Length: 76
Image (cartoon, rainbow, N blue to C red):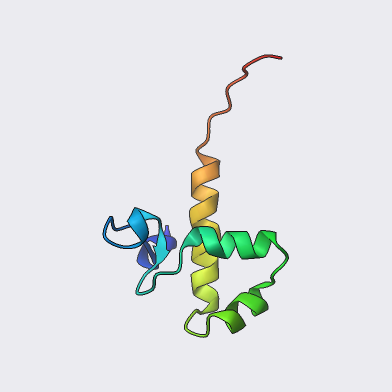
């Protein structure tokens, strides 16, 4: 996956949360801002050092995480 070139996890940076390489900007905060209604353009304006490729990497990372989830029926 191409996101591995742009997203890293290091226990010494943001407690090991995945971040955009070279920043302290977490994948979580980008996804949170988008969930709150921010567009890609908004995010790129908020964080001028980011590029469109960084946002694509965030989506690839999230996709890999949820794509590998296994659903367990816990019954109701």
